[in-house]
Length: 340
Image 1 (cartoon, rainbow, N blue to C red):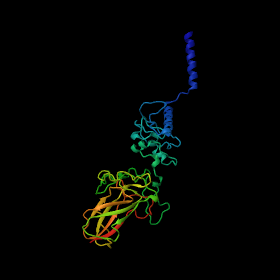
Image 2: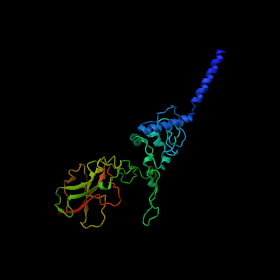
Image 3: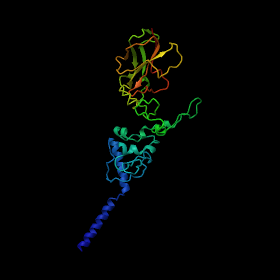
Image 4: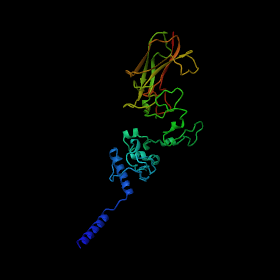
């Protein structure tokens, strides 16, 4: 009788407990895990891939699940498990490449969402091999001919920021890969930070002045007035050529350096284009400007003749400076002079 009473009591207790606490399926547990992870990420931006209310073993990632504001459920980011996680739900474990799960898994769907924001930390995003939805330029899908304009050429278009553009050129055209490849190459590095219009760089030679005559074969110092360029910053041109984006300092100025190059002319009034592979003197200006002036010593001077000396203003990794508008004054300067 006691056994029967205890069994009846246990059955009633379990029934009441079940009614008070609904049983969650494994799929529902995974869904809750994903939502909690997203909330934690929004709170502190940390590595939240392993923070779960219901821990689970590695295995197949869950299928895509529509979550409002999280990329519409079309993400294709891969978890460290073999399954593919959908938007709002990561594959099991941490996301490959160090990216946060929401950032990695919403690429396709979020590209068309007008309210996309990044969810990964800065460290995550710079080590991830997945394009973050927050940096997709929707304007790149427009060829500029809507409506067509006479004389203009339709632009090429891309839905993924041309992230794999150079893959189209391989193996015939190699990747630049930080090298100065004289036969040509394809460089995947983005342009980077572009200054405001009032921070565009410019330069003007103070010596030799335009039209000036100086003694032949006598050492001289070329001087240049520089404006709006954070000078004296340059990387190893043999290993990091064009290998990083243009950056700006705290004042919004392009971080980089300038160069001085002297070319021989047949006369000051020469109209034939020069050959860029031939020059009399070339020097990257290593030192920062002093009171807005940089200088370079031409130790042996120049033979008698006509010349032009020009600047090449560059970012730290040697790419020509990039500015925000198409219509602007020259960013460089040339001075034409003679030696006698």
